[in-house]
Image (cartoon, rainbow, N blue to C red; front, side):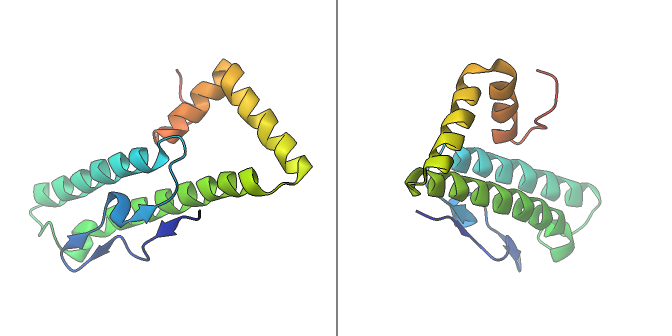
Length: 128
């Protein structure tokens, strides 16, 4: 149950988004949230290029999308993969650490809100 990430988010007049760009097991709707962020970032890159009078499908216009999505997709995919691996490891210390972390996430409001903001692609330290 590992994740997959495309090597590049863009090519000649093509931009990958959602499951075409990244795929991993469904954990906390992270794939869905990542796909929403892909769409938001792609629209922003195209809008910005259009406002500057550039070709919206050019490599220069899509470069900001490529950078932002690769960073987000890689970090999220590896994070989800780490969580999945911890679920099947069978190592007691890892099981205890995961249990403590998930318990804190479920019962400590500030931690839960921080994780929810991070999961939606917002700054995890922003005000609630």
